[in-house]
Amino acid sequence: MDYDQDTIYIVGDAQTSVNNPITQQFSAFFIGLVVDTTNHKIIDAGCSSTIPLTSRFVRTLFIGQSMLDLEIVVEQVRTRYYGSSQKAIIVAFKDALKKYNMALQARGLHKHQPTSTPIE
Image 1: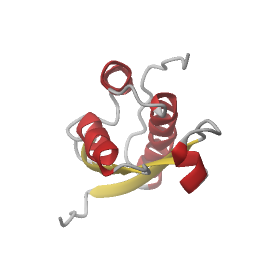
Image 2: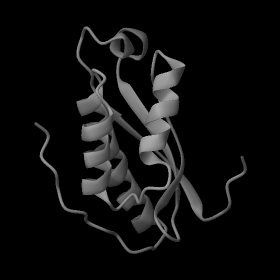
Image 3: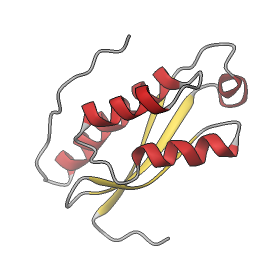
Image 4: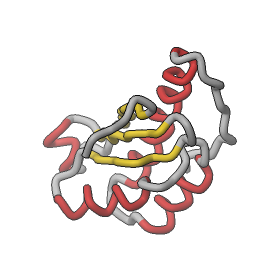
């Protein structure tokens, strides 16, 4: 897949529990997102995982979502993903959102502040 000039690549990371296989393999959890800055839509996604099915499923949680719809994305993760990395996915997305806002600012685009969701 080719990405046009209006897309950017953002990586968010988070720590996972010590007994999580992702921690044993990667030391942390990472999510990579390709975002179209003209409409803030996530057009591609990937994550660190030990099972290919996990990566494919996590992609479905993000592709088509807006980077700015924090509440919607968090709700998708909480209601659809029941793996041991659920909290890490949410934290990694929030980290990616911070980096996205920094990237928008660096490009001279408007910075957005979504509403915050506490992590339980």
